[in-house]
Image (cartoon, rainbow, N blue to C red):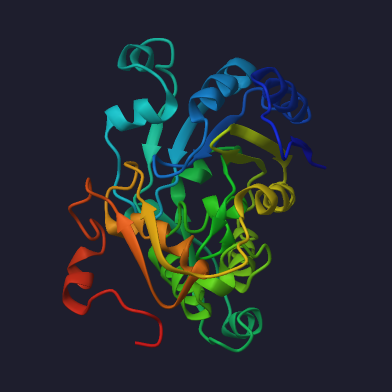
Length: 325
């Protein structure tokens, strides 16, 4: 069952968000449990300050402990100052009022932090990918989740260039996963191509993500948000697959804009939350479908000085190319 509400025209009030969240959380028993909340990083637009305090207010005293793991994927770890900004708390509050809450960065490239939970067989990959690929994929995830009795995914759903729409089980894979499934996931999306994937709810990549998540045997609740420049327009709470589906339906209505023609020149403004071209590439992915053949798309990003903090050494060597290259 999904508890939720969405509005194509307006925002949900804080009272509505608390009411929906309280209703959903009342259905599960967290007393004495160890709870881990999996959150987005600073490159995602979400009202995490609201939800940080909401979880503290609604469940903070019930569990044995309640901590956070930031789903960084391959993004660099973030500093304490950025973590405090992400959750809207001061350094003093973190040391005082919220001192019992630990906040962890995911580190995808440290094998000692990962645990193998299963394997997607070559036959399954071939079927899921429609014959595009046939290989066995080991499914590794941050082992810290096994120190907890209950997982809560909290993050937004947007059209996404690799999986179709973000959110749901994507916070596990690639959010807190190891490199093998993470790399495979991105390569499959790249082979299918961004214009085909972006804004499509059910994709081969999403099916890989959900298959990988099926190996996690820890109870999980997902808070799937739909966020626009206006604010929080939708919140759906339930099992990751179901909450994602409801949120993606609303996201398709409020995030995707259709044009009756293509454009020769497109200027995309990169927000300051993107630290390098690797993440600011989203400015291109979102607009690629409306660029005419032979047209030009410019990413305006005067604050960016690095191609990729994570993958720069490879991109400096081979460049950044289209699939067919």
